[in-house]
Length: 464
Image (tube, rainbow, N blue to C red; front, side):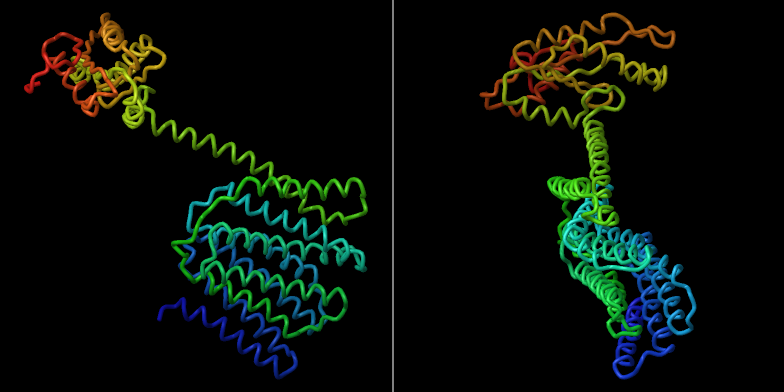
């Protein structure tokens, strides 16, 4: 048995011991300060040594979240037994728990695929909008019955909002990646934490909370469930989907409605309740920016995948793709091969050779019809698709572009080209041999020195 199963069972065993102890005895320093917090601490190494997810940042963030929560819990326990005053520091620890656990779990749930920023923002938008709706129906009536200091009111509002954001964020991530055994355990763990936290906040607001209540073990149960969930492998068949953009639109509309109500009736919601709405609108605009940048990046990658880097012409992949569509209409296929290029490239160097290819490509482009496609097929070979009946004339025009020398780096370079032309008839049963025919015609032109040769049965014998 490896170290991970052992670490995973330590937290489970300690939690069982705590529940049994508390079921038959009153809270003590031993049970609440030592054993209670030991359960949470035991889940941290279990998460860190887990191989799933294979994402160190996710594991570190989740472990730090539980660490800050446990630190705050220890301070709260000390306050309860020794009447010290670590409340402010403890509350900071509890608040730090939320951004850390949010980052860790959302990233962990997305580790089976490459997580794009726009997907992370989608998760946050859905969570914030759901929290805004909860604020619309729940927080206002709750805030009307609260009393106490500004800090008490702030904490009474910010914690339920944070719990809702966390729960709906994880729910959104599970919705996107699929309900596997691993995702289900994490979702239940977060749900248990949120329920335990909301129960505590309700009992605390009504002055009925008793320190050391057995219900406090819900927090510990949630951490144990998270440590187990992160140990399960991701379901290979789980789906990974992006949200429909309409979701962001609905979230934006809901948040705008909350803000509009707050403007019309300034005292209808407490100020803290509209923070998720403002954040949702900010995230929606951020999503739009990322979406535009992502579309631009994908467009550039798509263009690069179909463009020759040296000349800027279409590459072989794009040429073959266009050729399949081209075969449905009459036209001509031209294959061009530069004469003497290899000797020039070997004698004058690759730098001049590359520049020569670029300038030759520019000359070819200038004489082509607008609807024609020119591509570099590799090395010094080019291909042209010419719709219609202008193929022979286009071939002659292409050859004429190289009738005068190139001037490169002080060198006058003469370059020729051999062109094979094969006309295409969609109704012909031999249309699939068009590439072979154009290639044969090009070699015929090169062998005979004709420069341009059109394929025909009379000049193309089996020897060619």
